[in-house]
Length: 164
Image (cartoon, rainbow, N blue to C red; front, side, top):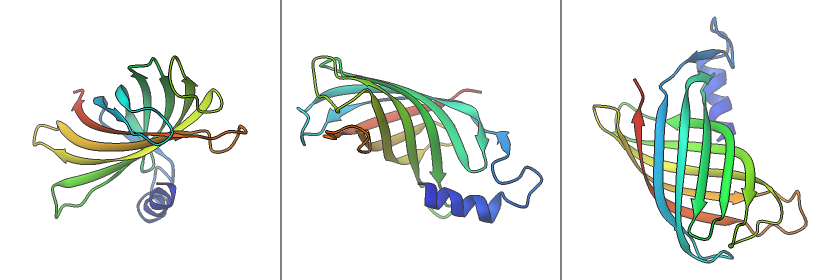
């Protein structure tokens, strides 16, 4: 995400009046998804995820706040960046996200510690009205800041709505 975003920033934002990470207007969005924790080290089970995309960007990066909770009360809350990849030639978009947050294992899967990073990709179809439908994959772990780093993945179906 950051390599693509930094390349975009260098090509399209640096050298402009706003600068490389200048603040610009964006579209606030409400994002909701439901899916499954994937069996890897975690037990499979349903999870719900909500995200609020803020109405501004810094260079090519959007800003978002998110919260998820599973059937076994595994909860995550965090803040981070999004990066939208789109082309005029095709109707499908991709959005990458990288977020830092706090995790509580509840009755479920421990990640080795409270700090957890959430990163992933959404494959998006956007309607003319701005509603987005997405297939989402994400990974949570703590990037080896604690001794054990079991990680967990989810696959979800998401819908997001612009707030106008």
